Image (tube, rainbow, N blue to C red):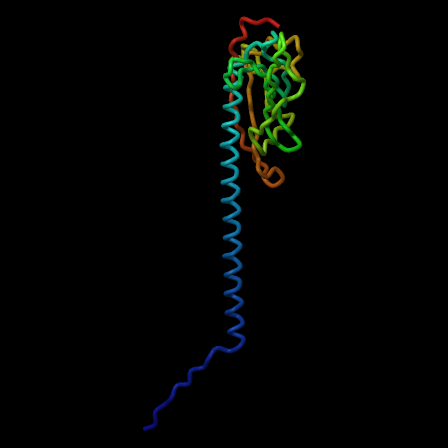
Length: 212
């Protein structure tokens, strides 16, 4: 009785090419998914990091504003107030002397910055017109005219939160009782339409004893 021998046929060249194609498509899809996931993670991480720094900056500014006081030369505690620029007098380093502190939004570089000017040793002391030193408080700040970094209110803020027109006229500076600080953060303003908004208000103290 003859034994039948089964013949095992190997894969043809066409089958090999198809298998390689399917495998390559699978690898490409996985790679694209991995890259997309990494970009999403990187974006979320960077946004969270910048938002944390911005939140810390807002709290720092708000806390400083609560301590504004008359300048060492007798000037009113608020020197100027506009939507992206605020100059006040504060003992910023707790050394007993009152510094001129300049908070401003560098819109060319999307930075919130703080400039400090020390009083001179003259009698009465003088302050330089510019900033003696400047430091960056937050980056990727994208505020515009619709969302000012600084808004100013009178004592009726909690009943009628209508901000003063900016820049606040010099004769109206003494009416400011509350300053709202709001930063819009966006690490990729051209790719992401949503901004992270961080804001807080500061009720100004030490003003009732002063008249402009």
